[in-house]
Image (tube, rainbow, N blue to C red; front, side, top):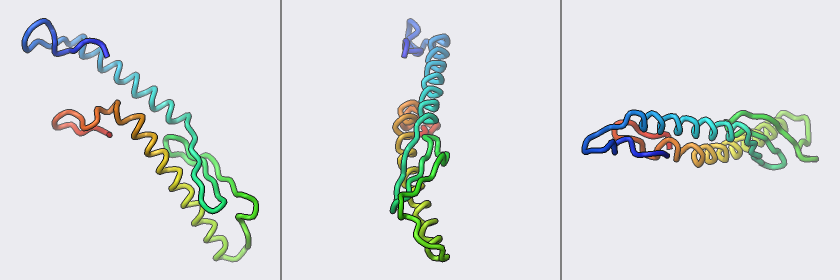
Length: 119
């Protein structure tokens, strides 16, 4: 970032222009990190089922390995549904980790006193 807004040429000074510039830089960095996350696709897998989830958590695809769908009985279909859910959870965990890594530093870690961060 640019200069320290609290170092305005004397004790107790506050440089509002520097503070505004830092806020604008942080906003731009946050928006760029969010764009990168939205463009990222993560695969989650479970038992021959692969789901594709965007970095912001949207389900964008489901693929089944040959032979992973075997049967028309209700229990077989319920098992398939369980595999889809498990694969989605795997991908969602990965996207949550990515978001934490990408946005955590921009959110200021623990945040300011009285203002908890997002990380």
